[in-house]
Image 1 (spheres, rainbow, N blue to C red):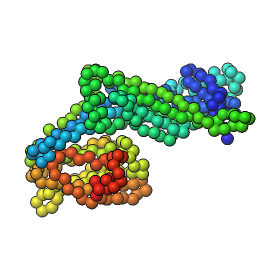
Image 2: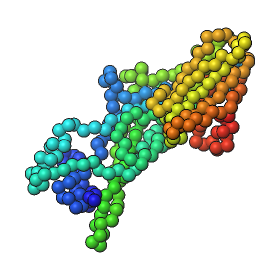
Image 3: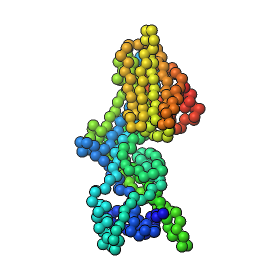
Image 4: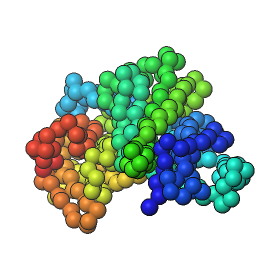
Length: 318
């Protein structure tokens, strides 16, 4: 079976292609250069959301402070339709009568978001074709990035490191090998030019006295914390006359990382509410935790963070 000869390549229209080690009319094209995408209105495809919550006496959590940020970048990787016909024409002019062009094999893609010291986004064991990068930020990084944006000093860089696989001839034998390809996308975040791309929300200020409003956050699917997880459901129950009133929010791949529960019935904000979490897996199985009690707080973060031990996660969600 053929494979790219990593020692035999050429550049056509600024695109590198490798020749097959057996079939010299077969060529492998390297991945397209990544660029920052555009939103439907033509503006740069980036956004930064900062969420803050400060506990209040009325919700029995006075003094509690919670900050989380979310940075979203849309990266495109596409080529003009005419590039492949142009490549075939060029190869024919070089003596290859019937050139065939295939995609270069990729064994690993590592994506790193760099700002304020650097943030690793993730590693994929395949080709990354582009799309939305959604990065949850902890309190420190969220505040640093927001302050930098407000001061007009922000440049974010996305580094895409790819491992291209093929073969090399060593002592008359073809042996598997690889080469690295690095691409960097620089993103200038301009709050003066695009203020609608930036959102700062104080969650506690949204809750009216006498009613329960709950913002629920789940970053499991954004961070791909559990590969076989299909959906995560949180049920929230508040005490009312006769029986509890229960509402739920479902999170899954592609859904928003934030959900909102707004109970229409008034209640005593000093009284606790209950919640439980259910996981649905891709094989159809379901695991439901026990009900847990929580007092005050107009937010609930149900993310199973990686820096927790398995024991702590189970205790948190049962």
